[in-house]
Image (tube, rainbow, N blue to C red; front, side, top):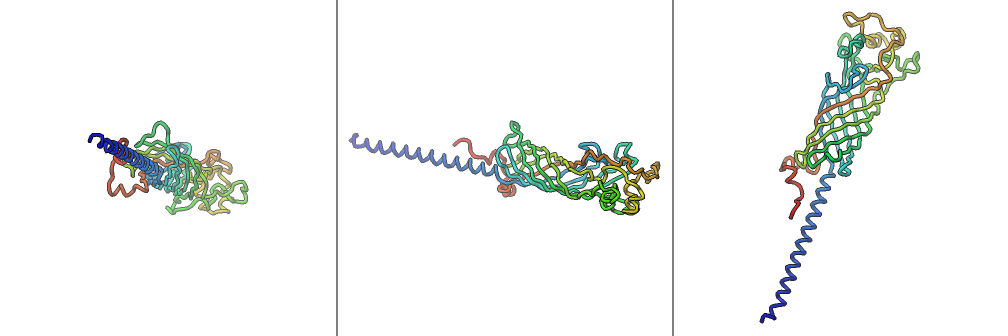
Length: 308
């Protein structure tokens, strides 16, 4: 009777082994699928909203990284991670830069020049996550790329009318008497680079700060670059308004009423203009955006299980 039950015991043992094998296989597949899904999520597109302050460095504001008299700007950033280190990003920004010699160094206040310009840009860049500092919540990064931007400097005249400066050829640009002074283009290239850090609030949302710098190849963001030209030549070619806005020291209480001599320094052509902006970002993962509205769980609660 005992012998007849031995095959059933062997049969039961084989069933247990099959069950264990199937369980291990199922857990392995589940783990693989979860890790694959997590990897796909980590490489999904994100979109960020940016807002902050914009300023510029040039002949009317020689100081770097000065946030006095800055203006608000905004932008959108789209990212596509390539790996744990590299990300492709592209974006658009719009903001305003302005400066006035009354805010400048004392020896430059006598020019009494000013300008304002809207800056619109689009760019693409490669972003590098800083190794050994990043973790699942905190991500510091650097980036560099190529940008195209548009600007158009203007100012107010004595009557308070808004006047665009490029058509006035304030330094003789485009006049036949000054063949080496070419008109500047209002759409140009720049090198964008910057640094920032992000902190993950959830798998679908991260907040951050970012500093952005733009190296341009023009010295005319402010319509000031080189030397004064002959007053009579400018008057005949572009009219009284060009003369008025080329030199405005005569508007100051103790300013000189005499127009500067041709060749007198008006700007510094060897130093190109820059613009920069600093602000905060709010980043959303596109495939997880519904989690923000339905179930905004902490990051740690949405990851794959580490033990079964």
